[in-house]
Amino acid sequence: MQSPIERVVQPRSVIQSRSTSTDRAVEKPNSRKKMLAQGFTLIEVMVSIFVLTVGILGMAGMQAVSVRESQNTYFRMQADMLAADMADRMRANREDAADAASVNYVSDGTANAATDCLGTVANCSAAQLAGYDVSQWLAQIDNSSIPGGVGTISRNAGTSQYTIQVFWDEDRNGSVATVANCVATAADGCIRLVIEI
Image (tube, rainbow, N blue to C red; front, side, top):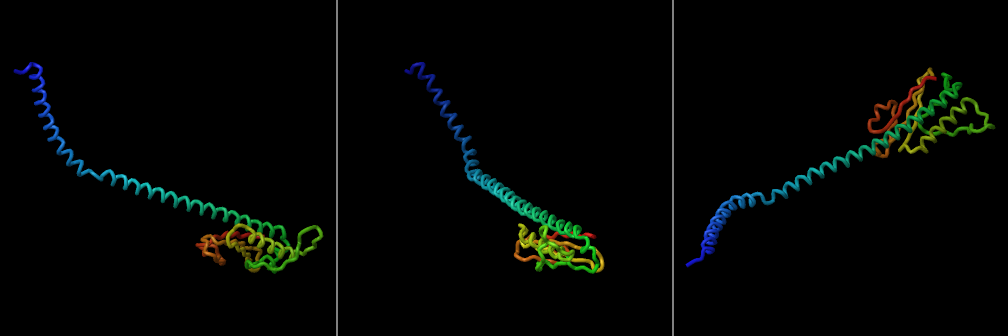
């Protein structure tokens, strides 16, 4: 004969065994889903890492372009200042620059020997001062940080209109194209200043 406690316990074990079999029946579909989903999280992580990498590479590329364009802006500013300096030199020596027959300010970018017109004892003519101005200007271009800087000055014949151009190697290929018009030098940098004396 069983005690009343054993009778109560026994039905519970029957209930537990039934719930266990129900749990197993419920687990089977979940375990299939789990087996099918294995590796899915790994794929998600790999895709997110790929997207992150593409974004970081894009940002690095934008930073490189920003630095290069910032430097090109600096070179353009220097070239603009050098062209304006030559225009000021011409305006200061109006006697030679306005003379329709004078070509003393015309230069193809090569420096010629010039009389030193610096100091209080120097006694230079207007033509000598023009030669000195051109040689000093070309030396400033050479001593600037502009890569491969070249300066040219041309004059419309019979007028007092000058075209001052400063070229530099913007694409860093080692050569600078000096042409009559800045538009033709797409890969290289150029500043063009036209003045009337």
